[in-house]
Length: 314
Image (tube, rainbow, N blue to C red; front, side, top):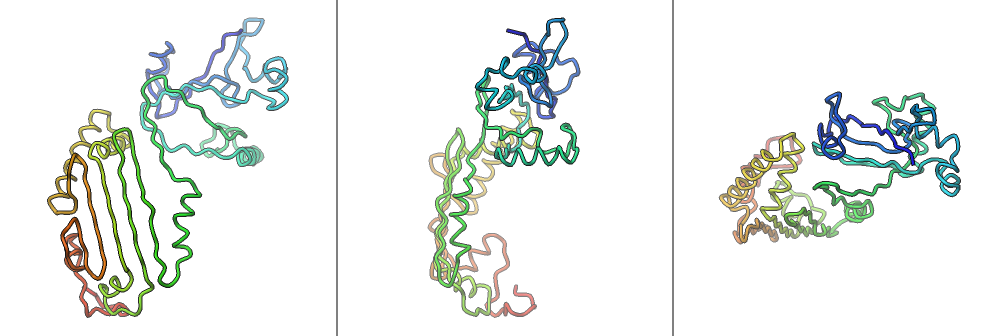
């Protein structure tokens, strides 16, 4: 067994002291220490002490005799160390991580090599030819956000719109998003028609929409947690982000009830909207299209407005 000297990546989002606290690694340059790399990545390999007391890169040792260093099976299958062990120390929220397929990574890596783009160049996209499947283990409390729809889900959701024709109903399936503090839900059912000629904006809406039903529920604790993370992304520290989120969510809840846009029960904000036969019903309050638009400070349409003209309609 040989002791390795491992490299540190100084990305802007990294912590200045986490690696010091965890492993006693000194921050001699006083730069953010974002990632500790242990492996044979060509950009920044680990080093081991050779027989003469000098340092040699782990990649060089493996390249000299892959079967000896990796074992025959791994050497024959991959030809190199097939993984990179990292310790991530994030002190700021990380951006969305997008990794290519193995085929795309190999093609992109070869193309950028052929173009002579250095591995450490800012415009370099492919640092190696691998697809980077990841296994994550938290050493300290760590918050990860996910919940993105798959491509198949997105295509399925949008297909009715792409195939729309005269008098086809379009349905939006229930949408939910959640975090450790709760789950919010939004459901929309919208039935559309191809409108006949309408001389005014309200006539166009009346003849285009058969029916609309929308239902929204948001737990205040969940909204506060989500807003806290948004504030952290803007650079606020944890305490200030939490305070700001609490103020914003409580203010939004108060305003939405004041203007009768939502109701609150058991620490959950709810809003229900129904439209049919030229009438809106918002949380039990019935109103016309003109009354509904005026709630949001929108100009009330003039029934005599000609949409085919260029004159103002309001």
